[in-house]
Length: 236
Image (cartoon, rainbow, N blue to C red; front, top):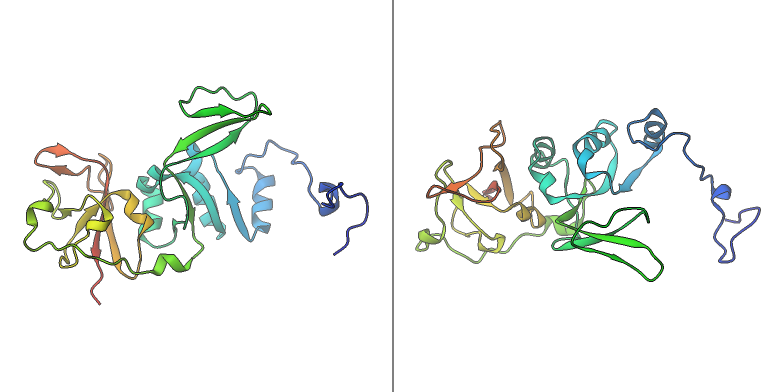
């Protein structure tokens, strides 16, 4: 397709030629102007404010949008987000599985974080730990069966039970036993390998606030450990 009017030296049309225009307001996703733009979108791809992640996802669900957005992995434990994950309405994307990621920030942004840098052109970057893609777009790898090689029988001491919930502790996804059909607790990073045809999400042990999907932080022999997702294998 040919565009009329001026093109940049690299042949890319100017913003005005393809209908890009500045917003009239401040760009708040909750504004009427931005909501009207959202209604026109087929797929939303963005890095929303982490502090408003619950509200932003709720808006995407309300307007029935497909999306690929960046969020902190701890958002998995938010009551509103976990409910959507449990109901198989959103899941983690196929990349950014570990470590941290670098984000560009405005030049007037204060660099107080430990992981930050300024490049040779004065552009500022900070590194953020524990980020993930959150999406409701399906992909092939999400349905690949996790191969289980460990056993529970004969190794019961390696899989202690929680003090406050009838489930065994599985500290690493690769250690899920092939011969155990009861409830198991795994780190939230299990969702990187979660196959909804192979496993069922029962709930979580992630905060002190107990509700229909959260059973309080997990304890083993009186010691509190990190947040866990409760799952069990689906019987085929």
